Length: 272
Image (cartoon, rainbow, N blue to C red; front, side, top):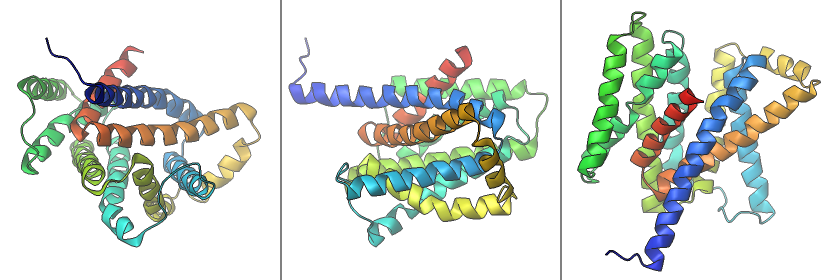
């Protein structure tokens, strides 16, 4: 009989907690975002607010001693710039894909991410995962192909944007895992740099798409509604929780584990 040491048990518990926390936060975020977007349709402005609040919260938390995150370092910022780029590119292409792909097919295509992470890991010399994991990922990808064959509303542009989004999501998760393993960065530090570096890109995006400044005036108008404010604050808080648990799960476990948890989240959301 195999006996776990205390260190192994602690490591296993941390990995499990990180994965479960990300799954719960991810599933909850789907419903919270849905509730917000039913009243406030400017999704990119909402994402910008989430990143701004994240940046300010971590910054002041560090100043007041609530977090051990290190201060802004130019070398680290340059190192994590690709993470921020791929993160925001994933968001931009995901939103673009939804213009031509229905939501069920979009969710199905995003389930190709574990396969993409699996392939990326092999190219980066991480080694081959267990046969059970490989077969599970391939089975998920096969299900996506079957779903695509039954999609009579096929849109080449939408599908292309969704596949590119899968690529960008794969890249930023792999880079997050690498940053945590090789550079010793915590999930809070990666989250801070990702949010901070995302702000210029998101500001450009909401101006280029025409959301700003109209989206801001709509936000001020709706701020008089107490119920909307509650949902908005909940969305901002859960945005922080989601990113934290996602980065934590990726660092403690792996990019592949995070994507598989995302697939399970999609199943749970569908059932709910």
